Image 1 (cartoon, rainbow, N blue to C red):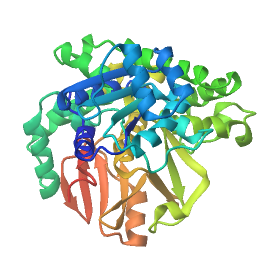
Image 2: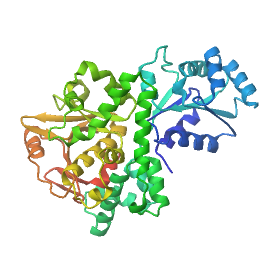
Image 3: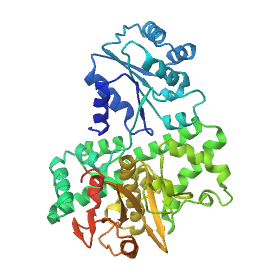
Image 4: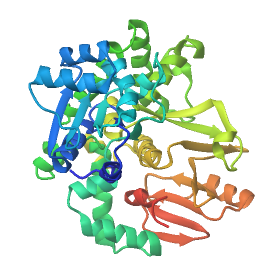
Length: 433
């Protein structure tokens, strides 16, 4: 399946002096993407899984000299590695800090070594690196679950994608049958989420949501919880799991600003803060900060103790909340559909804007503030067609923004300086002028 990260890999291929590191949560498709890239673009390809290959792990423990490392790998694997025509993929590199350190020396080598690497929890590893991380010697890219546009590409809905983009630009409503089709595809995406395994399973079952194996989502959550215990001290792993499992409860609250007391009534920041940092670094959670001013740069006005947390994938949120897919597809649970919808927007925005912000003023709240073409744009989220909102109207009166965005089930439009964006067109925001 096509992933947008492929464009970044193609750019790296043109000037591959620095090793490339792909960071992302487990099951987002890192290994698959890099394997396909290596096979398609290079004459020779060597795959090494450092979590399984103890012998090669020991090589890195003994030396960080690229020439010696390659020589030892050739002996262990009984292969010849031509630095000019061979790419080496170091998977699960987080298990060897020395392997990460060696990337600096591969970068500085006069030989044209081509190294790509990936691993679960690399973000955590970097943040807690005990040695000197090779800053400036590694090209770092991030892979997130498939966004809605990638989902449509996987379904081969190419004409629908172009239709959505056209109407996003023109602000003209799409004809009702196409609008309704796109909304139904969106609802299915909300249920499936963006994990490649889920979308592949959906496709292999002829797009029949009733036959999708939703146990896959449970298995991914189980693997996340297992990682929390495998790569942390026991007490921190338990706290990580407590926070992760508390997210559905947090988002269901009317005021869903995160409070440590949601995790445990006696919980305190000082005890759980490192665990929260771990989950954020792992990309399992996304953080949306409250800002005190709606001015650029928004990051300068963050209130450090006020924020919301979202799961990195709506399908996993559905599974963690123990919701049945029919509740979402048939709009049986309006309250929690709003939660899923807001989480979906966060998942679409974060890879694009690299940060998330919301804003309170007087007694009102704006769901998201985004910076587009230099302007701070308020974004209001509605999960249905009822779009009346005092918060956005009051914001417009008070601050007179360049324009505002309202995301809902309503068709495209532009009225009272509010751009109406259907839920299925969120991928256009910030990408299309």
